[in-house]
Amino acid sequence: MAKSPEFFDGLVLGVETSCDETSAAVVRNGLDLLSVVVSSQIDEHARFGGVVPEIASRAHLENLQPVIRGALGQAGIEMRDVDAVAVTNGPGLAGALLVGIAGAKALALAIDVPMVAVNHLEGHLFASLLSGQEVELPAIALLVSGGHTMLVVIRDWGDYLVVGSTLDDAAGEAFDKVGRYLDLGFPGGPAMEKAACDGNPAAYDLPRAMLRDGYDFSFSGLKTAVVNAVEAQNSSGDALSVPDMAASFQEAVIEVLAVKAIKAAVDFGSTNVLVGGGVAANGRLRSRLTEAGEEAGVRILVSPRELCTDNAAMIASAGAFRLAKSGASPLSTGAAPSLRAPFVLAQESRAARGSRE
Ligand code: KG4
Ligand code: ZN
Image (tube, rainbow, N blue to C red):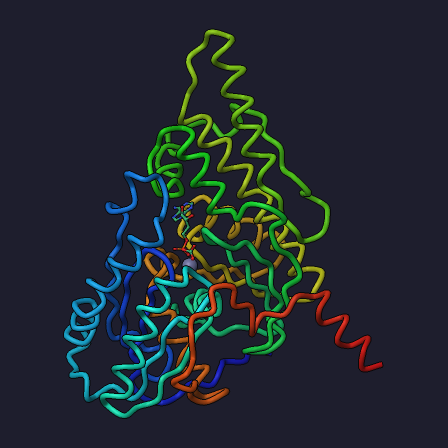
C-alpha cells in the first residue's frame, strides 16, 4: 500500500553538524526543499587522513551562523518566518552534535518556535523521499554511510526494524580505509569511485563475505584481502594497477550490498527499497541496484546524489515528520552520540515480544 508520511505544515529550518559537514536547509511541509547549504571541512581533516573530532567541533562553531544565514537567504525568508527548527542529536561526534544542538535551541528560543531532535539515520532515510516518489510499505531501507551499514524494514513511518548491520567496518569506512591505503586521499569513497572508472572490476579476485548468509555484513576481511593482493603484486615485481584494485574492491562491496538489499525485499514481501547515506552517492552502486531491482521486480528509490552525503535538507524533512508524529523535543535534549531510537534491532524486538507473552 502506498503510504506517505504525515508532515508538519510550515517552514522547518534543519541543522546538521554530526560529523564533518556543517549544513542548514529550509523545507516547506516536509518535502518541498527551498534551500540547502553544506559547508564541508574536508580540507581541514584531509592532512590527518580522517575526521579529527576537536577540529570538527571548532569548524562547526565558525561555520554554523553563515551556513544558516545562507540557507535562509537562498530560501528568500527571514529567521522570523521559520515555524520550527530541526537538529540532528545523534548518532555522531559528541562535540560536533553539541554545536548544532546549542545553535538550534538558541534560535528556537529566540523566535519562540518548537525545536525537534532528529536521528541522523532517519534523516538519511527521508532523503530518498525528497525525490518526490511515493513509497509502498513495508519497504526496505539500505543505509550505507561512513559510520553505519544497515538493512531496515520500514513497517510504518517511524517504525523501523533493523534486520542486518555490519559486524565490523561500515561500507563507507571500508572505502575510506582502502582509499587511504592506496594513497587516494580522504575521503576514500569518492576518490575510489573516480579511480575505479578506469579500472577492470574483475582484475583482482576479492572476497564477498557472507554473500548468501543472512542480512549482516562484514567488510574487514575484504580490506585485508586488498592488502594481501597488493603485497603479492609488489613481490611479483609487476606494477600495481590502482584503478584495477579500486574497481575490484568497489565491485566486491557493491555486489554484497545489492544482493542483500534485494534478498531482504523479497524475503520481507517488499517491492520498494530506499537507499541512503554517503555511499549511496556511488554511481556504480546506484546502477547495480537499479539493474538488480529491475530483475527482481523491486523499485529502487535513491536520493539525488548531493542529498546522499550529510546535509540538513534530510534533517529538516525528517524533523517535519517527527513534529507531526511525536511533537516538539524538550529544550533539555542533549547530544546522543550512540543514539539508536527509533531504530529497533530485530533481536530486541523478539525479546520484547517474548517478555510480553
Ligand atoms: O552519510 P555520510 O556523508 O556521513 C556519515 O554519516 O558517515 O557518509 C560518508 C561516507 C564516507 O565514508 C565516504 O567515503 C562515503 O560515504 N562516500 C562514498 C562516496 N561518496 C561518499 N563511498 C563510495 N562512493 C562514493 N561516491
Ligand atoms: Zn550521514
